Image (cartoon, rainbow, N blue to C red; front, side, top):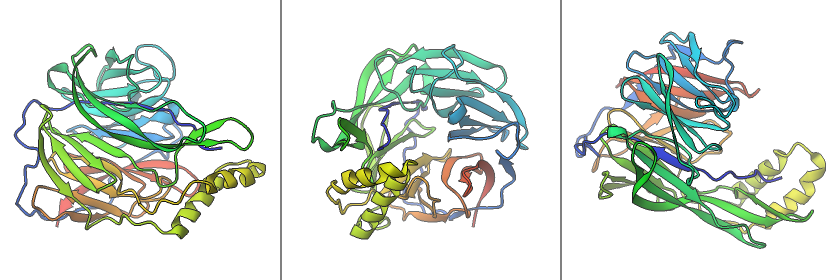
Length: 377
């Protein structure tokens, strides 16, 4: 069967200053590199990792990992020893039914999103639960805390499934909310991710992700700038919190946007083989082969903004494949820098305090997280 889509929403937080947005514009910087891992977590029996969605790194290099498969936030000391678990599955104030991303806040706090309960939970690195804020009218996806207790929410909406609906695009909406979660104003409307509606040969409708689905990536830096990366044109745009666009960077020359029929067919077969029921493969293959070939490849698979205001962009790759590296955008008018990924890296989770936090997945599906110093060449 196609994966069932849970449509979500996003919330984020940032700083009141609009001083940066592209702090190193026009100035070429040395290319960074990642050295050997100093910390590895996820191998011990007391802290297995399952569906890691994000991580945050504190100034003292202690860090938290969103272990979404278990609805728990794991806190680790700087040496990788497990300090505590901040949450578990449930519907209580500090519990989650579908834990999403976590983001660092001022004062050794973090904000975590629950997609199912539509709330943002604030936790302290030392004492745990602090408070929670409901967002009942939004399908939230992630959280970035803003200064003065505000939130910037990114909600995703999708039309009702219809027979023969085919490929469609959801809509994203960025809205600013006051400390208790009430919306203050709409910030920006952006494209969301792609879906596809198909008629199931066995009857009924199926909604899922099409091959090589496009999306829009959103992040917020420490100076109060909102970053939006779009797949159609391989552009990254930056806005201040008034909604004014401060700059745009095109990576069209650096990422391929063309897709071959062979690549398309291989992805269709990969989608078929993910169904563990062999008897379902033939009808599923017929259904997926009915999707018209789209020769456009998405530009990006992810985006992170570090504490220096630099943007790390992963060129598109299949979600269950490792990434080769990232294009690093350090300013307007500055050539993007290619930063190779250490072997076996699935995803970049965080770059802060001169260190990178990386996700790895072994051939057996075992997830680990490493912390690596980042050095300038």
